[in-house]
Picture 1 (cartoon, rainbow over the protein chains, first blue to last red):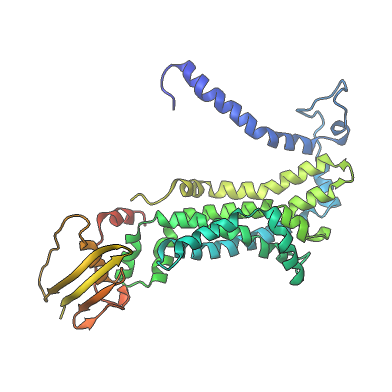
Picture 2 (cartoon, rainbow over the protein chains, first blue to last red):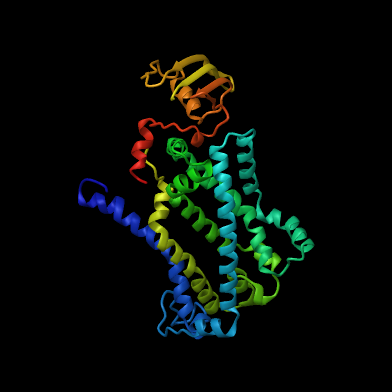
Length: 283
Length: 92
């Protein structure tokens, strides 16, 4: 908190904070307003005398009902949930073991292996989807959820590994060594001592991985083609933009509903998640 | 009988020679204190006895058993680490 006169607090704290909050939340506000605005208002030209872009006089839920009954939106939600959930679990499992090994075990080339894993994360997806498309075709996985469940870990595993590696390094080695002297195997020390301390780190890795795969667009666009297999980001943009007609109301309703699961997960774990970012064990 | 014998114990970390030719015999019921300046290898020696650090060369015997390759849990010894871990224990 800023000390001193009241005006200083306003000028340096409340006003910048307020401006930042408005800046940050405006897109969400726009999304909500557009999703409840009737079509007659949505497609009104901006020169019209009753043009009111920032609010609506006749809020309606017709876009939501259209979205849920007229499109396969609920199927897309389930697809996305399944794909994001499974690929997060796979990546978290691999990332946990790899992160632990790279931060704790001494083996030749551990350092360069860690860097190598990080470099694979830096390869852009826009480049990687071309060879991956070939792999998916050879395994005949195209247009199935498994195409995404198996390709998302290509960027999620390096991500989780690096996040957790840094986290494990911050946990004092002595804790584990106590356990090992007192009769635990390395595996037991890892599962019963290190993992419980690393819960905030594991949760943040999981939340990030889930969000990344929930929002993923290009792999989902390339590897899935039939409408009933699509994920939310791809389904909404490909089925609700027909030619040059944008169904803005439904698009925004889809975006709003699609962002709810991620927002829920964030709010459930926010305390652990912040602890994960700021570090846990005070040594 | 609880005897600890250390024979020609050596530890090298890459270029650094952390522990050099340590010979020590601690008999049953004997009380021994290792004293030395910081970085002279006290902790490394104890870690090798406990099995937390691999041994470059030499032997560690507990009782009459050579324990060089034995994992820490099978050596039947106990240790209290430096303070750092104890304060962290409070969080467990």
